[in-house]
Structure formats: structure tokens, C-alpha cells
Image (cartoon, rainbow, N blue to C red; front, top):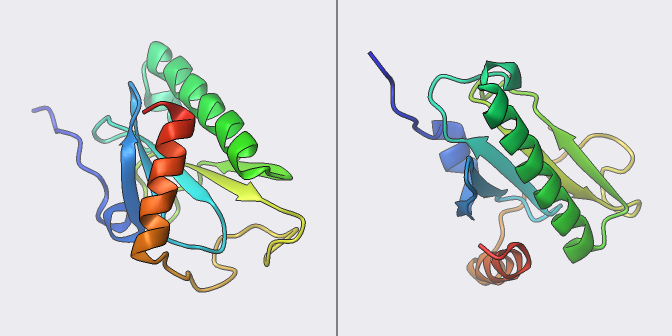
Length: 137
């Protein structure tokens, strides 16, 4: 029996849907501390990159690189933090966090460092417009 893809409930709760690429959904973490985006391959029951078929692995890398390059340019990043951790959310997802030497958590990782400060509705709308324009999605 084949399982259909469903976004993990924690990602639904913590993120805002932005759009999609060929393989992945693009989400924005609802935390205004950092520009923080997540790619989620739309494949059921996948927890690790190596579980994707080889062509899908290549597509994931291409989409991740495209996203990272554009986020770095759009937000003038000092550094891009990209990670697939999955300890709390086992569904494969790749974090793309724009970092600045001046950000609150620098130089430490952002995970669990500070309580999230949700975006306002206007900030969400503005970010969605900016990112979709930058990424052409």
C-alpha cells in the first residue's frame, strides 16, 4: 500500500506555506528572529536524503542551492546555515537560515536558543511577496 505525502503536523503548526518547487514545498518558519525557510520534499515516508531516488537527491540539492543563493542575496546574509536534523520532526526537511554576525544567537546555532517571535500578518504578507519575487515562484 502506497502512502500519500502529508506535511508533518509540527511543520504545519510552526511554518507558513510559501510555494513549491518541482520536488519540495517551501515553508517559512514563523519566527521573526531570523529569515528561516524550510524545504520539504513531497515524498511520503522519507526521513533521510539517501532514501530519495538518485534523481530526486540531485533535484533536492539543486533546489536547496537555488534557495540558499537567493536568500543570501535577498537578505544580504553573512552566512547561510543549512541543515537536515529531524530529531523532533522525522519527515525529511532542510532548514535554510539566514545568519548575521549581529543576530541574537550568533555564532551559535538557532535551534532552541530563543522562543520564537511570530511575524505579524503584514510581515508575513511582505515576506511572501519578497521571496516569491526573488525566487520567481
